[in-house]
Image (cartoon, rainbow, N blue to C red):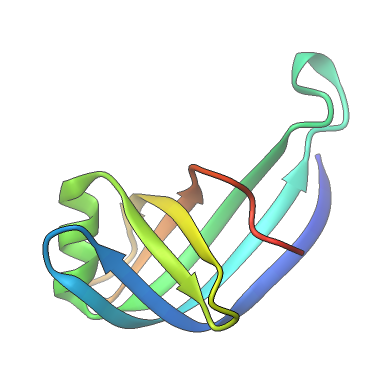
Amino acid sequence: MQHVATLSGDGWLRTRETGSAAATYRIEIYRHTGGPEHGRLVTHGVIAAEGWALAVARLEGAAVLVQQTGEAIDVRLTSMGSDTTASFIVTGKMPAF
């Protein structure tokens, strides 16, 4: 895999049921360099936000991360790191980089 970009900043984590919470995020974007996935982009992200927002996003299975630029990114939390941090992947359109 080839590292393509790192995006980080402040934004908002939005859930369907409970609204938004301020968040700090970091997204690593990689490109597959071989095999059947050649050229495909994949992500790994970490987000810090209020615990209730992370818990709801995890239970709902989907959330939206709104970057400080205003770009909205569909995400799915994959694991909780602590009460206020979680790992995630981008599930929709890749963010601009």
